[in-house]
Length: 162
Image (cartoon, rainbow, N blue to C red):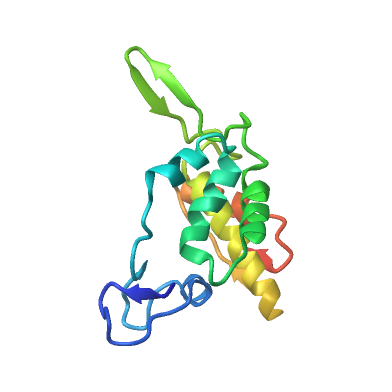
């Protein structure tokens, strides 16, 4: 699947997911989005029901990335990304009165940003390793994004943090 710029849709051939992730923004300043959304069928959704969260995340990502990453690679990425979460189900569904609420706050920094950043960091690490390259992440923030970004890339062999 190709990823296209929100500003220049259709003007060029788009980018692979790897190119989109490693370049951040499209050359025209737009954000990259998938050129189409995969079809989700009832049987597919039902087949995902018993999966642990890391495997479910890998299956969803594989719908978008199957041309670039194998199901096994994505499963490894997601398992590693979510290994630091407590509880084991990563984003528990809890009942609050009559409501059911997802709690995406059980990652290393207790911020919901841990969920996406830890997967993204491992994908960046994988792509850099393939290219035999290194990257430096410079973080400055007063919010919870910076600590979540630092925690996400900490320990990746191809990424330095400042």
